[in-house]
Length: 207
Length: 207
DNA sequence: CGCATAGTTGACTACGCTCAACCCTGGTGG
DNA sequence: CCACCAGGGTTGAGCGTAGTCAACTATGCG
Image 1: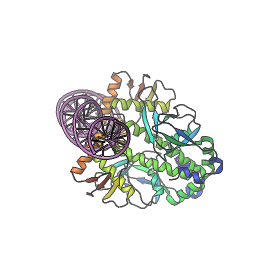
Image 2: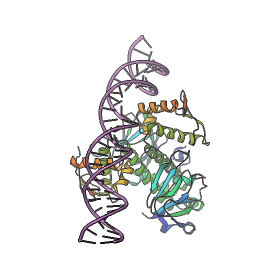
Image 3: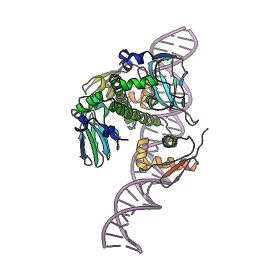
Image 4: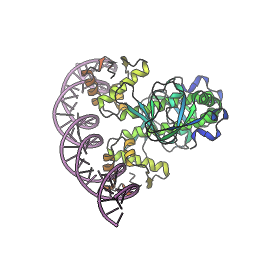
């Protein structure tokens, strides 16, 4: 996915785009700051946290490569969250006024943006609905099935490569690494999946 | 919120829009069906379920009044979920081809759509991040604070009216009604909130 | 070789779910 | 007017499962 159709960007916008380098822990913007720009993560990982009442901050989003950061900011005067680089990262900054008017003027850009958002809604809905299945092994199985489905069309057996550490997967699923590990072990013991190195293959057990 | 700027819809689209009445349990579309139209809930409540492998179905979304139903359908050939009316409902149907081309041709429409999606992403992210706070009373408190924030600007004390039954709130928070009840009781006992009838007021306890 | 990190396994704890009883309100009908 | 019922909400008791803390292994890197 090209980043907001960067290559086909109208010149008036493209010329205002800048790239910023972030060190781990560096703050990109802070909750309450006036919105100057809209950001896309080009490298690394940026966390969005809401620390609003002095209580323990809550992580609203961790944006990976290619993800946009706080879409609401396009429609608010101040950032509703703070953004902090998790690791060394690069972000692309689109000045808000220019981006806004470009979205208005160029349908292609607006459509790209729309597609991004729809995908995001999709993924968020999936993740949220997964949280409703309580049993860890069940949740994990459904997640794997989902991954298999998006990568290979057939509903049957499939091989999945999860390249990122299990730790991250665990967090995404709302589990601890230990619980995920146990869940995977159990699924394997029950013969619903098998693991080799990084890969997981599902055995079809459709009812 | 007007429904996709219905009043300002280009005539070519507006004339193709229809309203459908659904009885409780009636199926609006089924997973795998070719996408004919895009829907908006005008009255009632429609559930989106994914029943893909014969296993227990999983509810992906419950769309209330004013919400759009399965935005991905705009970009897929078949519906990825099934939609079932929860209660007696009315939906507005936008034929997909007309809506697609209208989104392309009319920036105003595209922008409306974009705003909808951004809001949705926002709300989904909030709900998802709430699930990460484990302690029920904490989760509830944060939720209440969020509600207070969107209704009244000041960060301090606020009065919230939750008009819908606690049962629903509980589900949205990923809790059972019993647990929610206990959580509210506890918060009240601790003096962080107080309840009168339907209303809840937060006592500011910022650190 | 030593260190850091990911992953696994074990033992214990804690918290939310389940099931059940109970209260309370509103609505209906005798 | 009271009896009855239905539904939401609350409270109680017990259980199960995921979290926590800890130890241990394996792998990769300096």
